[in-house]
Length: 223
Image (cartoon, rainbow, N blue to C red; front, top):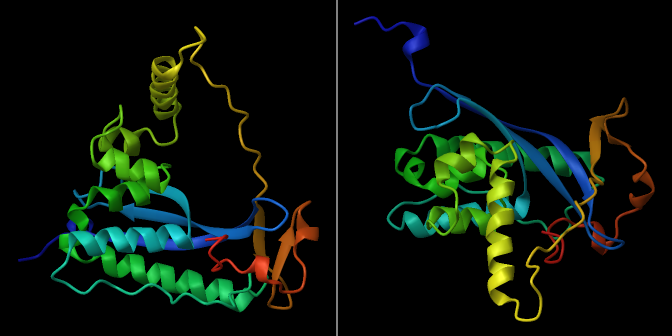
């Protein structure tokens, strides 16, 4: 029986565009863009893009491992105590390993039933919020978190939840709203330079120094 090519199910994922983030004077990390394109009915969005760091991949694998005790999970690129953020080879090899991990996960039907995987790939939620959402402990559903990930809808619900919590815990003030200053984006793009190394184009370029312990993404404080 002939099946039209456009009817064949596919899931395409890529890990690209590493960006350097400076948390403070001593802690720096790299995150990566995850682009997903699919026609699978398992996914609510057919195209999506989010950014995740290595430690979040580690968290995801631990979650999947707890939910699939009878099977061996795909491996992540190994933790490297000497991972150097300014080393092009290290960053590229890690991206390849993360891509292979996701490809193997996405082609394992049992793992596709875990809502945390879908929130990881198609929402802007951090790992703590993903866990809460998957357990039904948020004002928004998994579907809403994914479909409206780039809108202000989720933020408004979270603000309302925060206001309600602050109001209930406040005994000395009639105001329960906590105002926070939006975090400044201090990310730095990596671009392949002519010499084969990663070229950093940003006002934060001075933060890239010869390898020191604080520049290792795999250190406990920078994961």
